[in-house]
Image (cartoon, rainbow, N blue to C red; front, top):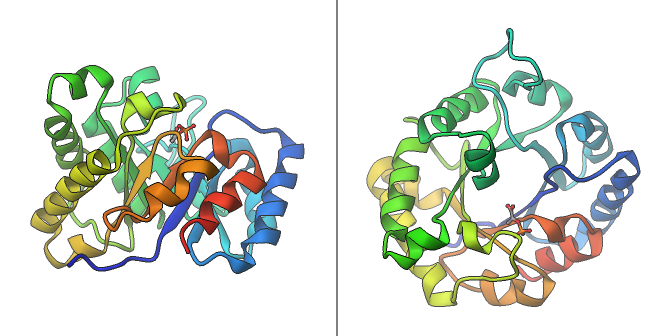
Length: 249
Ligand code: PEP
């Protein structure tokens, strides 16, 4: 039977939040005491340093939403993994479907970014997931398997990697896969991790992401194959985020 891993609830604020939004982070920190899951909040890059200062020494870790593969250089507007670490982040989301679509990020680019994250001491939260058309044509596992193989560098382990399975059609739509559908893909990802990472594979957390909210969190998080959630919209409000985290226990 699969090992029970400590769940991780990660919040992706996307391009949402101004300085006053850090009050929500404060409320998350204040409410995190009774939560058994690990908590990670990924605000926009410009808020990371302030968020990390507030979260320092608390149960809430702070992460970025992307990084460049290079440590520094002529890349206007980009943020390096070293800059995220310097700002106080301990993790970074990579290969989110919005970046794959909006910025043309390929698996090879995501892989290079994951290497950069490790170089800077960050945990890479690598996102994979199929579109509706890919699911409809029976290709969900092919797509997820290809993204996993292409996006995760050699040297992955539970200490530096988290996988987020996020079916693109479930992100921000209010729609979620059925429990058996989630279990099927998570089981497939776990088998690939076991194959590729040998003894490390069993300890890498696999999060589900896509329209997780307080009303469906318990149903999804009770699945043994699910080791936590990557939460978008519902991570903007402390009460929702904490309710999702509470559903882990
Ligand atoms: C996401 O973008 O990672 C996500 C899961 O979004 P939402 O929870 O809003 O569907």
